Length: 178
View 1 (tube, rainbow, N blue to C red):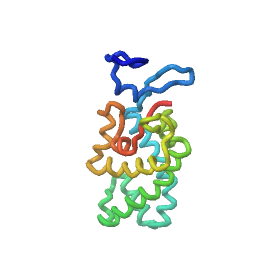
View 2: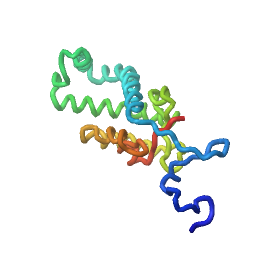
View 3: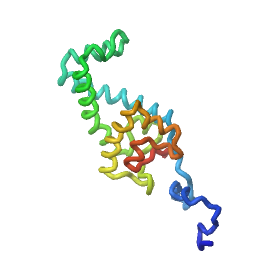
View 4: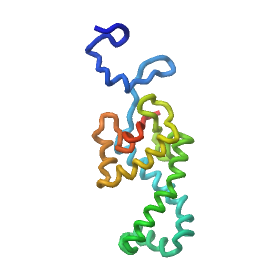
């Protein structure tokens, strides 16, 4: 039998990693943000990042790109309007161009605007403190890993005990309610 606060062997030790001590000294469990709330935040972020990136993409790809985006939005055509290699280049450019905005918000506010609207923030999974720069860059790279197998890494959030996607697990982060 151990001595101290966790002497009771019935206390599940793995839950200790999920505890935080509030300003009042009370031990609390973090409130994880689940799949649907994070999906909503993703949709909101997709809107603002599209608005920010549209002028840059217009400069890089010209009016042909904008026509492709417009026809896709109207449902009249799909991304198949552009050749496979052009579509791949467009996707990579969009992802690379959005990285500074997304990672910048994570560094500045520990959340993107979509997460901020839902009172959610990204924290280090071990300390529940603000994650480091390298950790956040790894998290963004982890998005690609989460996306590749049919988005399974993002769907994982719905089933994980701590509501972590694969990108969160790779980077050692959590998304919690403020």
